[in-house]
Image (cartoon, rainbow, N blue to C red):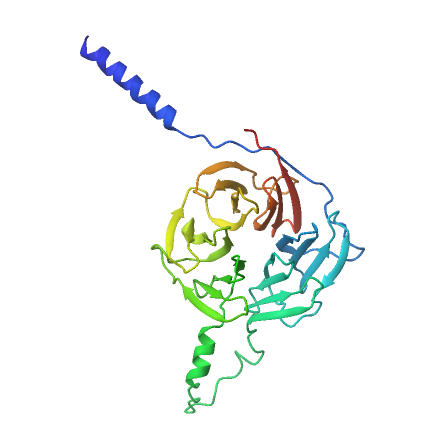
Length: 331
Protein backbone atom coordinates (compact mmCIF):
# COMPACT_ATOMS: atom_id res chain seq x y z
CA UNK A 1 0.00 0.00 0.00
CA UNK A 2 1.30 3.43 -0.91
CA UNK A 3 2.30 5.72 2.01
CA UNK A 4 -0.25 8.34 0.92
CA UNK A 5 -3.08 5.79 1.03
CA UNK A 6 -1.97 4.61 4.48
CA UNK A 7 -1.96 8.20 5.70
CA UNK A 8 -5.51 8.74 4.42
CA UNK A 9 -6.76 5.55 6.10
CA UNK A 10 -5.06 6.49 9.37
CA UNK A 11 -6.57 9.96 9.24
CA UNK A 12 -10.06 8.57 8.62
CA UNK A 13 -9.70 6.06 11.47
CA UNK A 14 -8.66 8.78 13.92
CA UNK A 15 -11.51 11.05 12.75
CA UNK A 16 -14.08 8.28 13.24
CA UNK A 17 -12.72 7.49 16.69
CA UNK A 18 -12.87 11.14 17.74
CA UNK A 19 -16.42 11.47 16.39
CA UNK A 20 -17.52 8.39 18.33
CA UNK A 21 -16.00 9.73 21.54
CA UNK A 22 -17.38 13.23 21.13
CA UNK A 23 -20.46 13.80 23.29
CA UNK A 24 -23.10 16.20 22.08
CA UNK A 25 -25.22 17.93 24.71
CA UNK A 26 -28.92 17.69 23.83
CA UNK A 27 -31.14 20.76 23.80
CA UNK A 28 -34.03 20.18 26.23
CA UNK A 29 -37.45 21.30 24.91
CA UNK A 30 -39.49 23.22 27.48
CA UNK A 31 -42.44 25.52 27.99
CA UNK A 32 -43.17 28.36 30.38
CA UNK A 33 -46.52 28.60 32.17
CA UNK A 34 -48.08 31.97 31.25
CA UNK A 35 -49.51 34.33 33.89
CA UNK A 36 -48.10 32.26 36.74
CA UNK A 37 -48.49 34.67 39.67
CA UNK A 38 -51.76 36.51 40.32
CA UNK A 39 -50.83 39.58 42.32
CA UNK A 40 -53.47 41.77 43.98
CA UNK A 41 -54.08 45.25 42.55
CA UNK A 42 -51.32 47.74 43.42
CA UNK A 43 -48.88 44.99 44.45
CA UNK A 44 -45.86 44.37 42.24
CA UNK A 45 -42.65 42.39 42.15
CA UNK A 46 -39.32 44.13 41.97
CA UNK A 47 -36.20 42.12 41.23
CA UNK A 48 -37.17 38.50 41.87
CA UNK A 49 -34.09 37.40 43.80
CA UNK A 50 -35.48 34.17 45.24
CA UNK A 51 -38.13 31.52 44.62
CA UNK A 52 -38.93 28.31 46.50
CA UNK A 53 -41.76 25.76 46.57
CA UNK A 54 -43.01 23.86 49.64
CA UNK A 55 -44.56 20.38 49.93
CA UNK A 56 -48.03 21.75 49.10
CA UNK A 57 -46.79 23.37 45.93
CA UNK A 58 -47.05 26.88 47.41
CA UNK A 59 -44.66 29.35 45.78
CA UNK A 60 -42.55 31.77 47.85
CA UNK A 61 -40.99 34.80 46.19
CA UNK A 62 -38.29 36.92 47.84
CA UNK A 63 -38.23 40.25 46.01
CA UNK A 64 -36.25 43.48 46.03
CA UNK A 65 -38.83 46.24 45.79
CA UNK A 66 -38.91 49.60 47.56
CA UNK A 67 -38.36 47.30 50.53
CA UNK A 68 -37.30 43.68 50.53
CA UNK A 69 -40.48 41.56 50.77
CA UNK A 70 -41.50 37.91 50.95
CA UNK A 71 -44.75 36.77 49.29
CA UNK A 72 -46.55 33.44 49.39
CA UNK A 73 -48.75 32.14 46.55
CA UNK A 74 -50.73 28.90 46.37
CA UNK A 75 -49.98 26.18 43.82
CA UNK A 76 -52.19 27.93 41.23
CA UNK A 77 -50.32 31.21 41.68
CA UNK A 78 -53.02 32.97 43.72
CA UNK A 79 -51.63 35.42 46.27
CA UNK A 80 -51.94 34.12 49.86
CA UNK A 81 -50.18 36.71 52.03
CA UNK A 82 -46.99 38.60 52.77
CA UNK A 83 -44.58 37.20 55.36
CA UNK A 84 -42.35 39.38 57.52
CA UNK A 85 -43.76 42.74 56.51
CA UNK A 86 -41.36 45.49 57.68
CA UNK A 87 -39.12 42.87 59.32
CA UNK A 88 -35.89 44.30 60.76
CA UNK A 89 -33.80 41.62 59.03
CA UNK A 90 -35.15 42.32 55.54
CA UNK A 91 -32.70 44.61 53.76
CA UNK A 92 -31.50 43.19 50.41
CA UNK A 93 -32.96 39.83 49.38
CA UNK A 94 -30.72 37.09 48.05
CA UNK A 95 -32.54 33.70 48.15
CA UNK A 96 -35.41 31.90 49.87
CA UNK A 97 -35.28 28.15 50.59
CA UNK A 98 -37.77 25.65 52.05
CA UNK A 99 -36.54 22.78 54.25
CA UNK A 100 -38.05 19.28 54.60
CA UNK A 101 -40.42 20.50 57.33
CA UNK A 102 -41.72 23.40 55.19
CA UNK A 103 -39.89 25.99 57.25
CA UNK A 104 -39.00 29.07 55.19
CA UNK A 105 -35.44 30.39 55.20
CA UNK A 106 -34.49 33.80 53.84
CA UNK A 107 -30.86 34.66 53.16
CA UNK A 108 -30.56 38.44 53.24
CA UNK A 109 -27.34 39.72 51.74
CA UNK A 110 -27.89 43.29 52.94
CA UNK A 111 -28.71 42.46 56.56
CA UNK A 112 -25.98 39.79 56.75
CA UNK A 113 -28.60 37.47 58.20
CA UNK A 114 -30.28 34.13 57.59
CA UNK A 115 -33.82 34.08 58.99
CA UNK A 116 -35.94 30.97 59.57
CA UNK A 117 -39.75 31.19 59.61
CA UNK A 118 -42.12 28.39 60.53
CA UNK A 119 -44.74 27.39 57.92
CA UNK A 120 -47.14 29.95 59.43
CA UNK A 121 -44.61 32.76 58.87
CA UNK A 122 -43.35 33.34 62.43
CA UNK A 123 -39.63 33.85 63.10
CA UNK A 124 -38.04 30.71 64.58
CA UNK A 125 -34.25 31.09 64.39
CA UNK A 126 -31.72 33.74 63.38
CA UNK A 127 -28.16 33.47 62.08
CA UNK A 128 -25.87 36.49 61.82
CA UNK A 129 -26.65 40.06 62.80
CA UNK A 130 -27.70 43.14 60.89
CA UNK A 131 -25.10 45.96 60.94
CA UNK A 132 -26.06 48.64 63.44
CA UNK A 133 -27.39 51.90 62.05
CA UNK A 134 -24.69 53.86 63.91
CA UNK A 135 -21.87 51.95 62.19
CA UNK A 136 -20.15 54.14 59.67
CA UNK A 137 -20.96 57.24 61.72
CA UNK A 138 -18.58 59.86 63.02
CA UNK A 139 -15.02 58.76 63.75
CA UNK A 140 -13.66 59.14 67.30
CA UNK A 141 -11.90 62.44 68.08
CA UNK A 142 -8.22 62.65 67.06
CA UNK A 143 -5.91 61.06 69.62
CA UNK A 144 -8.64 58.92 71.16
CA UNK A 145 -8.11 55.20 70.61
CA UNK A 146 -11.23 53.11 71.18
CA UNK A 147 -10.72 50.17 73.56
CA UNK A 148 -10.03 46.78 72.01
CA UNK A 149 -12.99 44.41 72.08
CA UNK A 150 -12.84 41.56 74.60
CA UNK A 151 -11.78 38.13 73.22
CA UNK A 152 -15.32 36.76 73.48
CA UNK A 153 -16.64 39.56 71.27
CA UNK A 154 -13.82 39.08 68.77
CA UNK A 155 -14.85 35.41 68.47
CA UNK A 156 -18.48 36.45 67.98
CA UNK A 157 -17.48 38.98 65.33
CA UNK A 158 -15.62 36.28 63.41
CA UNK A 159 -18.87 34.34 63.19
CA UNK A 160 -20.81 37.20 61.60
CA UNK A 161 -21.54 37.00 57.89
CA UNK A 162 -20.32 39.31 55.16
CA UNK A 163 -22.94 39.28 52.40
CA UNK A 164 -24.17 35.67 52.65
CA UNK A 165 -25.83 34.13 49.62
CA UNK A 166 -27.51 30.74 50.23
CA UNK A 167 -28.29 27.84 52.58
CA UNK A 168 -28.75 24.06 52.32
CA UNK A 169 -29.24 21.17 54.79
CA UNK A 170 -28.28 17.55 55.23
CA UNK A 171 -30.50 14.73 56.52
CA UNK A 172 -29.42 15.39 60.13
CA UNK A 173 -30.63 18.99 59.96
CA UNK A 174 -27.18 20.59 59.78
CA UNK A 175 -27.17 23.88 57.89
CA UNK A 176 -24.53 24.88 55.33
CA UNK A 177 -24.43 28.61 54.61
CA UNK A 178 -22.46 30.11 51.74
CA UNK A 179 -20.94 33.26 53.23
CA UNK A 180 -20.21 34.25 49.75
CA UNK A 181 -19.19 37.77 48.79
CA UNK A 182 -17.03 39.07 51.62
CA UNK A 183 -15.81 36.01 53.50
CA UNK A 184 -15.51 33.36 50.74
CA UNK A 185 -16.35 30.44 53.04
CA UNK A 186 -18.91 27.78 53.87
CA UNK A 187 -20.19 27.78 57.47
CA UNK A 188 -21.77 24.71 59.06
CA UNK A 189 -24.26 24.86 61.96
CA UNK A 190 -25.98 21.96 63.70
CA UNK A 191 -29.77 21.55 63.87
CA UNK A 192 -29.92 23.67 67.05
CA UNK A 193 -28.09 26.58 65.45
CA UNK A 194 -24.70 25.95 67.08
CA UNK A 195 -21.58 26.80 65.12
CA UNK A 196 -19.78 23.63 63.96
CA UNK A 197 -17.06 24.68 61.53
CA UNK A 198 -16.10 26.70 58.48
CA UNK A 199 -13.98 26.09 55.39
CA UNK A 200 -12.69 28.08 52.45
CA UNK A 201 -11.00 31.38 51.64
CA UNK A 202 -10.62 33.68 48.64
CA UNK A 203 -8.65 32.06 45.85
CA UNK A 204 -8.65 29.73 42.87
CA UNK A 205 -7.21 26.49 44.32
CA UNK A 206 -9.33 23.51 45.32
CA UNK A 207 -11.35 24.42 48.40
CA UNK A 208 -10.96 28.15 47.72
CA UNK A 209 -13.69 30.40 46.34
CA UNK A 210 -14.39 33.62 44.54
CA UNK A 211 -18.05 34.52 45.18
CA UNK A 212 -19.88 31.49 46.55
CA UNK A 213 -23.21 32.38 44.99
CA UNK A 214 -25.26 29.21 45.54
CA UNK A 215 -25.13 26.01 47.58
CA UNK A 216 -27.01 22.69 47.59
CA UNK A 217 -26.77 19.22 49.17
CA UNK A 218 -27.56 15.75 47.88
CA UNK A 219 -29.14 12.77 49.65
CA UNK A 220 -25.70 11.57 50.79
CA UNK A 221 -24.95 14.87 52.51
CA UNK A 222 -22.40 16.06 49.96
CA UNK A 223 -22.23 19.84 49.54
CA UNK A 224 -22.21 21.49 46.10
CA UNK A 225 -20.94 25.06 45.95
CA UNK A 226 -21.53 27.40 43.04
CA UNK A 227 -18.11 29.10 42.83
CA UNK A 228 -19.33 31.73 40.42
CA UNK A 229 -16.33 33.87 39.52
CA UNK A 230 -14.15 30.75 39.23
CA UNK A 231 -16.65 29.28 36.72
CA UNK A 232 -16.99 25.97 38.54
CA UNK A 233 -19.02 23.91 40.98
CA UNK A 234 -16.98 22.42 43.82
CA UNK A 235 -18.18 19.33 45.69
CA UNK A 236 -17.33 18.52 49.33
CA UNK A 237 -18.40 15.99 51.91
CA UNK A 238 -20.31 17.20 54.96
CA UNK A 239 -17.07 17.88 56.84
CA UNK A 240 -15.69 20.16 54.15
CA UNK A 241 -13.30 17.70 52.54
CA UNK A 242 -12.85 18.43 48.85
CA UNK A 243 -14.18 15.70 46.55
CA UNK A 244 -14.23 17.07 43.00
CA UNK A 245 -14.95 20.08 40.82
CA UNK A 246 -16.96 20.55 37.65
CA UNK A 247 -16.41 23.04 34.87
CA UNK A 248 -17.98 23.45 31.45
CA UNK A 249 -21.35 24.84 32.53
CA UNK A 250 -20.40 28.50 32.73
CA UNK A 251 -20.60 30.65 35.84
CA UNK A 252 -23.00 29.03 38.37
CA UNK A 253 -25.31 31.75 39.61
CA UNK A 254 -27.96 29.33 40.88
CA UNK A 255 -27.86 25.59 41.57
CA UNK A 256 -30.60 23.22 42.63
CA UNK A 257 -30.69 19.45 43.25
CA UNK A 258 -33.93 17.53 42.76
CA UNK A 259 -35.43 15.27 45.46
CA UNK A 260 -35.94 11.54 45.07
CA UNK A 261 -33.74 8.49 44.58
CA UNK A 262 -32.51 9.67 41.17
CA UNK A 263 -31.15 13.16 41.75
CA UNK A 264 -29.98 15.61 39.13
CA UNK A 265 -28.56 19.11 39.41
CA UNK A 266 -29.57 22.24 37.53
CA UNK A 267 -27.28 25.24 37.26
CA UNK A 268 -27.79 28.62 35.61
CA UNK A 269 -25.10 30.45 33.65
CA UNK A 270 -27.23 33.54 34.00
CA UNK A 271 -25.54 36.22 31.91
CA UNK A 272 -25.64 33.86 28.94
CA UNK A 273 -29.22 32.87 29.77
CA UNK A 274 -28.43 29.13 29.73
CA UNK A 275 -29.55 26.47 32.22
CA UNK A 276 -27.70 23.14 32.36
CA UNK A 277 -28.84 19.76 33.65
CA UNK A 278 -26.15 17.51 35.15
CA UNK A 279 -26.03 14.17 36.87
CA UNK A 280 -24.23 13.95 40.21
CA UNK A 281 -21.08 12.70 38.51
CA UNK A 282 -20.82 16.05 36.74
CA UNK A 283 -21.91 14.90 33.29
CA UNK A 284 -23.96 17.46 31.37
CA UNK A 285 -27.24 15.78 30.38
CA UNK A 286 -28.84 18.72 28.58
CA UNK A 287 -29.16 22.47 28.33
CA UNK A 288 -31.73 25.07 27.34
CA UNK A 289 -32.63 28.76 27.33
CA UNK A 290 -31.25 32.05 26.10
CA UNK A 291 -31.01 35.64 27.25
CA UNK A 292 -34.08 37.81 26.62
CA UNK A 293 -37.30 39.40 27.81
CA UNK A 294 -40.03 37.06 26.52
CA UNK A 295 -41.41 33.91 28.12
CA UNK A 296 -38.92 31.03 27.79
CA UNK A 297 -36.10 33.56 27.82
CA UNK A 298 -34.18 34.62 30.91
CA UNK A 299 -32.85 37.83 32.39
CA UNK A 300 -30.30 36.84 35.04
CA UNK A 301 -31.75 33.79 36.76
CA UNK A 302 -30.87 34.31 40.42
CA UNK A 303 -32.44 31.24 42.03
CA UNK A 304 -33.84 27.91 40.83
CA UNK A 305 -36.32 25.74 42.70
CA UNK A 306 -36.60 22.19 41.34
CA UNK A 307 -39.41 20.24 43.09
CA UNK A 308 -39.10 17.52 40.42
CA UNK A 309 -36.78 16.64 37.57
CA UNK A 310 -38.96 18.22 34.88
CA UNK A 311 -40.56 21.12 36.78
CA UNK A 312 -38.49 24.18 37.61
CA UNK A 313 -39.22 27.62 39.02
CA UNK A 314 -36.75 30.38 38.16
CA UNK A 315 -36.49 33.87 39.69
CA UNK A 316 -35.12 36.60 37.42
CA UNK A 317 -33.50 39.88 38.41
CA UNK A 318 -33.66 41.76 35.12
CA UNK A 319 -37.23 40.78 34.17
CA UNK A 320 -38.79 41.17 37.65
CA UNK A 321 -40.62 37.86 37.43
CA UNK A 322 -40.80 34.17 38.24
CA UNK A 323 -41.29 31.55 35.52
CA UNK A 324 -42.55 28.00 35.97
CA UNK A 325 -40.85 25.77 33.41
CA UNK A 326 -42.10 22.39 32.24
CA UNK A 327 -39.30 20.38 30.62
CA UNK A 328 -39.83 17.74 27.92
CA UNK A 329 -36.51 15.93 27.68
CA UNK A 330 -36.07 13.42 24.88
CA UNK A 331 -34.40 10.11 25.68
